[in-house]
Length: 124
Image 1: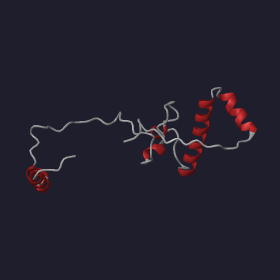
Image 2 (image 1 turned 120 degrees about the horizontal axis):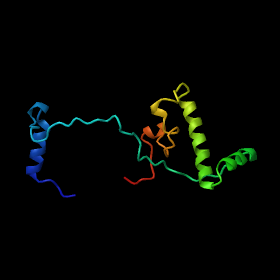
Image 3 (image 1 turned 30 degrees about the vertical axis):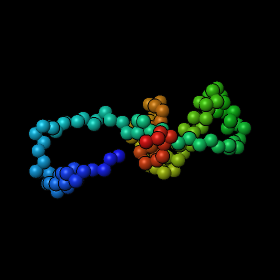
Image 4 (image 1 turned 90 degrees about the vertical axis):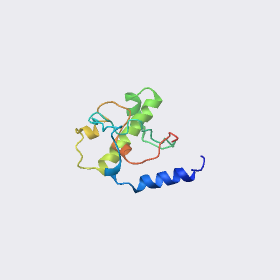
């Protein structure tokens, strides 16, 4: 990125020293934005890390009965673990509230842990 010229630096300094009342907004009117349908964490992609764990046979058998596809089975196990973590972190949460609807809506997942600034797979 190129260095700013002295004139640009002076203009930025003058702007920074202006009060909000001095700024002319006549050519950019305020917008009335409705955020009621906004969805937090919609594009959140959690970091995935491969791990080898040992589970009881009846646990694996149960998940195999629920999900034939191995990838779906792994996702289901992950969802159960996320739900357990949320129960531990927020024991009094109302699971029927819109804030926790990520699981009920079958969306992939926009869960409350995504509301934190957690790392993602996406390079910014």
